[in-house]
Length: 496
Ligand code: BES
Ligand code: MN
Ligand code: ZN
Image (cartoon, rainbow, N blue to C red; front, side):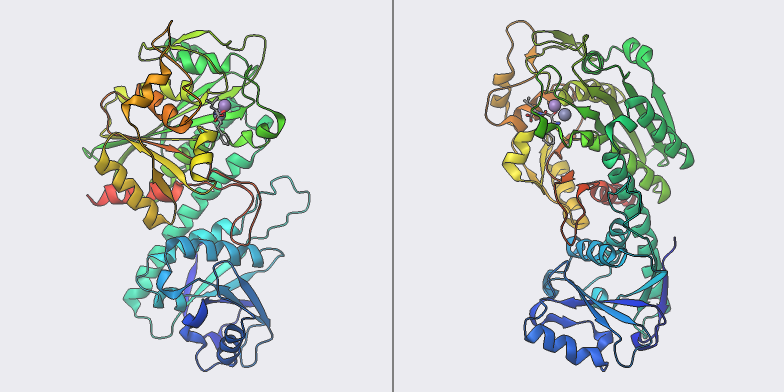
């Protein structure tokens, strides 16, 4: 799909539906409603508090007088002064969810309000939201409950040719990024028995090859030859063999390399330290870090960014089979460090240890890992904010700014050395679990033992990777979080 942009008065737009932005309180409707029958109506609805214009609110006005269209959908954008990528994305999701509920060929979306709110950056976020909202989590519904439609943007009549070209570029970028988010969502939403490591690795291989990204899939023999003791131990309890996938998108000449590392546990039962049933319900999504790494690299390739990125994803199940790792087992990881297993449910850090060590050996300029790593991070920051850890302040700040620009949320947590004390083991170099409190931090400290001197960021995405229930502006299930942030970060690298 390519989003077309037309320039004409809204009243003359020939589409079954036109979505028009409306700001909260006295922010009012977009200027292209000025002089139409809806201008006064929308103002009155706001005045009488029948509608609020809050983000995610949608109000259908049928058969508007003086319009060619059969319906105008007022889409809330929140306060005018606060309109940013986050609100644009949410508004896009909400309006797409609302209109994709039944088949419609085409929906016109007015850009006036978005453009009035300031610079054109939220245009991409709006498109990302539209693309994401058109796809739901109902992968196995016998009757599809989401019907993607063609989007036609309506720019105000006086928009210059130059501006229009810029808008087209932003819309095209938004489509690529939105589709990457959807890929990560779909992989997370896929039932666990449909995506054992080998199958997921082949899905990744195929997608990478389609986009000209070099890809290698390691089988268990190779993983053993490479001494990935953590990945092998976690996989030992499963009948499904593990896989390790490397991705190379090297389009930046001698520019510095960014390494992206993802946790890919395709189902986390906890292993012998078995999770209670309720805690296992969403553990098919414990491979979100891996999915996001893959999706972000594919987005970089589709955007043809002039950068060097290497991806590393470790794929395994965490099960309770007869060969499962046991409490008290000692593993030797890729970098030679030994780890005493004291909780088999702390498996993410075991597979990341090998992946990070291996990635660090190639001496990338910077490294980011993404992992649904700890419930403790959910306790600390809730379901919508990722924990941000890093060994270099400037890099962490850059990532925080990228997330802000992308409309996603991170919060820095400490990485102080005393948190390492509780990982002490009497038989090995360390244990895989720390003391009761501060579990997100001890997990990050554990990972730090495997990154050598590489400037590194760990994003604990246990919270934002998944939505337990849906809302007007978000679907239930996998969110594909941080594909957007990573894209912004990679674009910044392309400019520097
Ligand atoms: N995959 C889980 C973390 C998780 C929990 C992700 C909830 C998403 C939602 C991880 O492998 C895990 O089980 N972590 C343990 C670590 C503990 C045993 C130290 C946890 O958080 O309970
Ligand atoms: Mn676990
Ligand atoms: Zn896990």
